[in-house]
Length: 117
Image: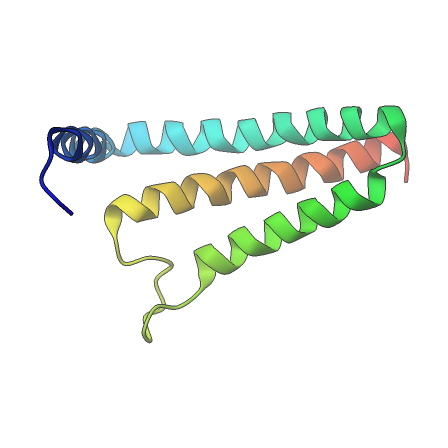
């Protein structure tokens, strides 16, 4: 890629964000927010899908597909490595996606127990 002003600006912003996340408390708080956001999404999705009761199968298939896709992306091995990701910057995005997925799964289980099914 060419070294344009926009490219330089984006690189600097991602660099600052990566340095900001080096603090473990900030990283943990961001991961906790992603877990809670996944739980909120589960409540929202189950409420919206329960109103019409028509697209239940399609929404369930979409959620399973998204969950399995995120799991594959996070836990796949790269060239014989057992680590989820070799890149530190890419690792934060993967951890946030995985946290949201875990919160979503947990929230859907809680909603199922609330409904008694």
